Image 1: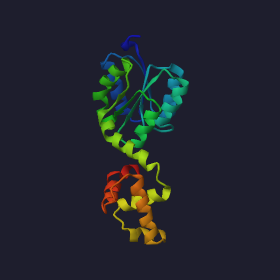
Image 2: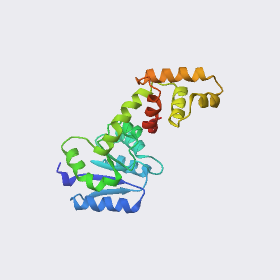
Image 3: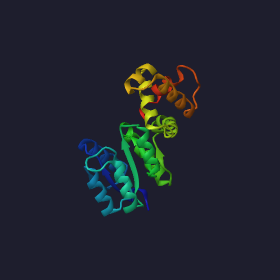
Image 4: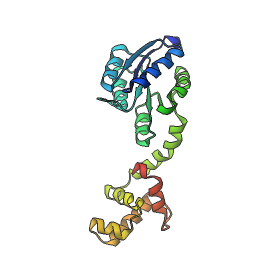
Amino acid sequence: MMAKNSKFVIADDHPLFLRGLADFLHQLGYNDIIQSHNGADALQKIVDHHPDFAVIDIQMPYLSGIEVAQKASDQSPDTRIILISYHKDPVIVKMAIELNVSAYILKEDALYELKNCLDELLKGNSYFSSKILGYSEKNIENDNYISFLTPTEKKILRLIGQEMTSKDIAKEYGVSIRTIEKHRSNIIEKLSLEGTPTSLIMWAKKNKTIL
């Protein structure tokens, strides 16, 4: 299959961005482009037309880009999904990786990166924005650590990140300071942190996006 004969479904609920995306693909020489303005319609078009590529915004009405990717993998498995988003949320990136989407690029750089993305996909490779991976890899690694924390430990860690003392947290939960100190000790052990007075608060502040 020649690259320029590739069929696309593109979906975004912002008309100006959608038009700009279509115009850019036309400039690259792609002409078989089907447009959609929401997630549910995008999924239906993918199922009906089995495009080679689907460029899907993550945040859309009715179905999110993640949901579209998940459902499309069963109903149109040969369609390569390219997710676009303004967000670098490590949880969403992790979900995309687990769904085996072909690409994930930042919306702010979409037109700049899309050509390189398609070049890589046509070679059989995947493509993730370097900005996304640079931001997410450490957070995804830390997310594996916090999966071992109990719900109570996660709540306490969030409060520690807000610079609340053990006394403040004990008062908040109506328990003894000794109980909170025991939780702190368990959290430090689970996160493999140094037992210094500031190690826990520094970790909590640095990783507040995954707590």
